[in-house]
Length: 115
Image 1 (tube, rainbow, N blue to C red):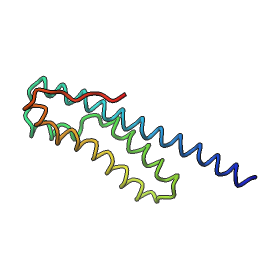
Image 2 (image 1 turned 120 degrees about the horizontal axis):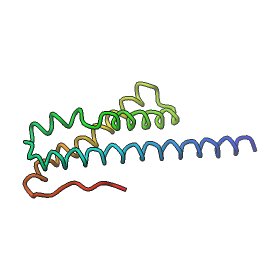
Image 3 (image 1 turned 90 degrees about the vertical axis):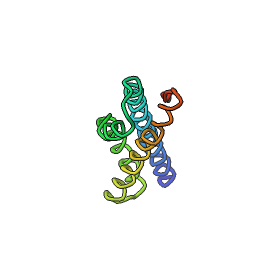
């Protein structure tokens, strides 16, 4: 009975931290949507955009990294492993925007926020 309750509690905690990590990822992504749209409206060049994007939405990026790190640590990752994974995930979100910027410019399209 105690084992069942422990598993149920761990599952609840894990689901909550996963939800926190996903919410933080969406928040960071949506902030980058706003940043990218502003840069597109200002007709910022691709190189300048890529440079500026690295420091855009820093609070949202740090919140995402923190939430993913917390999530990874609940699964037994070390602090270094969890941090490395969380940074890779945040870098992946950023890369999606920096890699797509030239395409947005050439097609006169805009990124769309996630819900």
